[in-house]
Length: 363
Image (cartoon, rainbow, N blue to C red; front, side):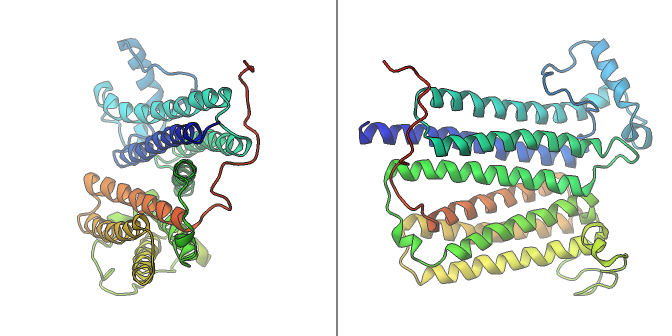
């Protein structure tokens, strides 16, 4: 295999993975819109192999009749007619259909690349793991929805957090593997960035961003952002009374609305401080142009994200602002992934020594 052929193959695989990552990004946005519009409990059955929506009046009547048997209709939406039901149904349906589309867009090219011998054994295992994680995410999504079909018309904040964080992890891993392919295609020697000593800092930013996302999921799951709508003070105090009013004390982190929101505020401010510290450290180092741009982009974006968070709180969680805030979290996480990739270089810049998995018969 010539170098040019190898580079073309790596770029093709990289673009395929980036497309999948972009689709997961959009999937998270759709999930946020579904939650914010309270559409997520409109489909009360999970049929993974069922693709078509209701197409006739009779099918719509049957779908609506099934919805009427569950708490969301009985306790919140008794006023709904079938036309009102359609408005919440379509968003949840789109969310589920998009997830299945991601599975197809990932699986079909993977099998083609595997058959053509473009994917070596280590990459094959990585892609298999990513596909399995995506399938597990679908199961976790239904597990989350099922929690809102029992007694109260709200999903468990624990399951919501697990579902959201798993989506972020899946997105981050796909993006990372895609960046690996472009690095191999370019043959770029990133030793200068690797030796900058910022690998630990950038990894900390990644992990802490994920922690902030987790805390935000608990805020969303409890609708905790709809109270204490002042900033920087909370309930008129820097540290409000009642943070640990529940017993046992550790439940406050997950079930006390005040504590959950307070934690999210504090963690977000710590993340801003971490990123600013990283930026100050990077200014003194001889980094590649791309790494320096990534640091600057991350610095600016975390301020935008913090501003969106404050506005979302002050205006009591309007849907456009809340959705922009969630999307901003994804962008911060993306930039942190890209930056960390600059500072964590694989042991070798050449292709894996493992033989390709040739599934195509030799000619």
